[in-house]
Image (cartoon, rainbow, N blue to C red; front, side, top):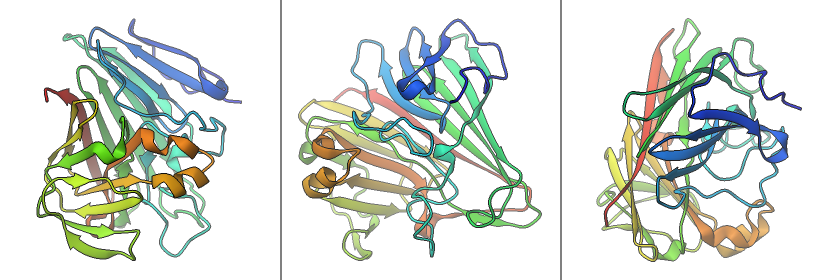
Amino acid sequence: MIEIRDHQRCALPESVSIDAGMGGLPCVRVRNSHAECSIYVYGAHVVSFTPRGKKDLLWLSPYSFFKEGFPIRGGIPICFPWFGKREGREDLPLHGFVRTRIWSIESAEDLADGRTTIVFSLESTDPPAEAWPYRFRLQLSMTVGEALEMALIIQNLEDVPVTCEDGFHTYFRVEDPGQCEVTGLNEVEYIDRIKGDVRAVQLGPARFEDEMVHAFMHVPPVLELVDLVEERRIRIEQQHMGSTLLWNPGSRAGAANPEIREAWNQFVCVESANCLDCRLTIPARGLHRSLLRLRLVDI
C-alpha cells in the first residue's frame, strides 16, 4: 500500500490537500477560485478538471481498477518512453511504464492570480534493461486555473542521444462520440491504425467513427473538440508536440474491454503526443519539454 505522505517533498499551500482516493491510492485535490482538479500520485495522473461553474472536462472509467500494477483508465495518463505498443515487444505494457509508477511531489504553490501549480517528478537511474535501458528524469508541472496546463520535461541522463515517444492520452467526457468533431486538422495526414496503418489526408473536421484510431502527424498547435450535443467546445493547445491521435473503441471493442464495457459512448480521446513520424531524439544530457493546455471556449 502506498502511504499518503511517502511521496511528499514539500509543504502544501491552502488550495491543495491529499487524501486516500479510490483503492486507497493517494489523491491530490486542488480547489481554487478558478477550478477543481484531482491528481493521483500513482502515474501523476489527472482524473478530473472542473472549471468553476462548469462540468468536468474529463472522463474517468467507473471500471478502472485503481490497483498498483494497473494503469488508471480515463483522465490524462502520461505516456513514456513509448506511445502505444513498444516496437518488437508485444509483452511490454502499452504506452510505457511511467503511468504505473509512484511520482514525487517536488513543489506546490498558489500563484498571485489565484491559480495553483504543482510539480511532480520521477527518476529512473537504473531501469530494467529489458524495458528501457536508458536513465532519465521526468518533471511534470501542472497549473490549475481557468485552463489546465501540463508541461512534461524529459531529461536524458545518458551520454548518448536517446529516441523515445511521449504523450498525454486525454479522455474527454462527451454525450455522444458520433456527435463530436475535432477542428484544425483539415489537410493533415493521418495513419489509420485500425486499417493496417494506411495513410490518408483529413478533409474538413474530423469525426469519430464506430471504432477509430487515427494518428495525425505534424499537427498545428491549436485544435478544438466540439461536442455538438452538449454544445461545448474545448481548445487543445500543444507546444513541442507533433502528433495528435483520435480514438474511441466503438461498441464492440468497448464492450469487450473490462475497464470500459458499455461506457464506450461516454468519451472520446484526443491524445497529444510525439510518436511515430514525430518521435523524439533527445541529445546526450539534453531536455525536451512537451506542453498541453486545455480550456473551455464559447461555442
